Image 1 (cartoon, rainbow, N blue to C red):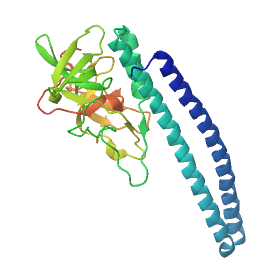
Image 2: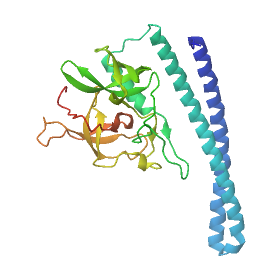
Image 3: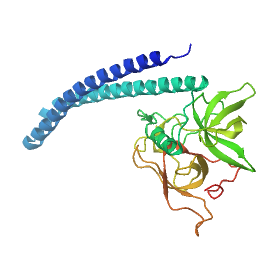
Amino acid sequence: MPLTAEAATQQVQERLKSIQYIIHELENERRTNEVNINNILKAQAKMNAEDKSTVYQPKIKMLYKAAITDCVQEENLIRQALAKIHEIRAIRNERRIEARNAGNKETIRRGALMVMLEISAQTLPLFVSKPGEKAPPLCGAIPAESSYIAKPGDLVAALVKVTDQEDWIIAEVVQFLSSQKYEVDDIDEEQKDRHVLSKRRIVPLPVMRANPETDAHALFPKGTTVMALYPQTTCFYKAIVNSLPQTATEGYELLFEDSGYPEGYSPPLRVAQRYVISIKQNKKFTATSTL
């Protein structure tokens, strides 16, 4: 059943109320945990000052257990809030797709499109693993599984033919056809093209960012050759990873292959995790064809 604008607004409001409640609960947990941590510090100081480790150790152990329990509860509340935010994103995306299918596609100027792409990358959900947990497919540099089918509204890199050459562009999935092909829209309003492409000409973009502090294995190593969205364009080109993100909000520093520079590469440029993907080995990409 199509999601009406009124129903979508109601669902978003419900989740915002849930997030507000979770935040209040989180603040209460943090205040409780702060008391426990202060008690730990005081007990540790007394133990050191009086040199009575056997007296204070049981108490400190009990305080540590309480603090760990509080931290786990904080983590659960934060994950609940992030899940609600993800639901809001999904509701809004579903509503946008339905509006587009109804013929109400909004025309977006190129400058606004660049801003939207940047915001989309910055607000992409962050995956923070639990101890021993590995990052899932489509998190950071982890590719999609071979059986994965991108959903309507998902962003992908698509290899399309433009005039007499082929380029990798950023596109939005319209649908996956029974012929094992994708129907995609070029997100560049100046092109307004729709393409039907085989699955091998589509690379799904990450749906989650990897946290460098907890999941460095989900990032491309330095020196890796990748495909990346050249800044202020909607096309992907070949690049080399010059440095990795150091925080969850940073992008990669990349050197794009470009014969216009004496070294054969562009100066270092920052590109968000969402727009850096594994290169297709059967195709050559250079940053000189359309820049």
